[in-house]
Length: 341
Image (cartoon, rainbow, N blue to C red; front, top):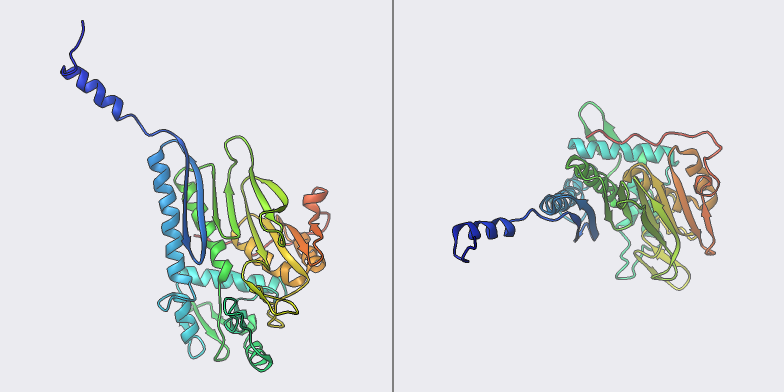
């Protein structure tokens, strides 16, 4: 039996064919949020579900930016900086947990990671090539110190010990955002993905049968890499002196500031840290950058689950023993625990 093209059964057959289920595959999405490129790449059996998962990641990134941007007057962070020098400011549960963990990292790193560095950091303008003079630098340095961030564990408030202090979550918020995004993807059943926010990334699973390849950029030759790491189920963060900087003739003035001096450390060009979560990676990469290769790698060797690659000012590459020789041989200290969400 043959059917004419207008036969009802033929029309129904054509309709079913056109409504075939979405094909599985890779979904990629990228947006500019938090002053950096946010990118998600994931595999999903249903492309519509994959698109929805990628959209959820971007929605979360925007939410964190609204809450933690130092540039948005309505953000919780901006409110803290306006008011905490004069009174105790109530914190959201999320902000409370982040500040708590930041202070734990300050203690672990002997203050080389310190979110109160912002009292100095606010006086640098890398686009305008401006830095504080000696008098302004000295006055700002006097307002830096993580022990001056006074948390009330009962009222969940934060107060600055003196007016003029500021905090900046900076990349710490990006690490937090990447952690949250990875959790959202897992909740949606995504088992193969990468989320990145500038220098902070998280890989989930592998890349469908092979590891994710993450390159460590050569800090002095754009487009070149000093190493390529095959990764699965890990977070990675790179801090480099090539991200925001200007040269003043004598040295490179960049955005990674030593809280003790208020100036840019000159002994290291880049630090890449691998750990179980983005917050740990971000805090440790900044601390190691300030400490330098020798002290910084000693810190990494003492932290459970952490590894690092350091490119020093001479261009020499250093790596933690776990990356070079297997498991570290020194006693290890747990990193401050991630906040439960």
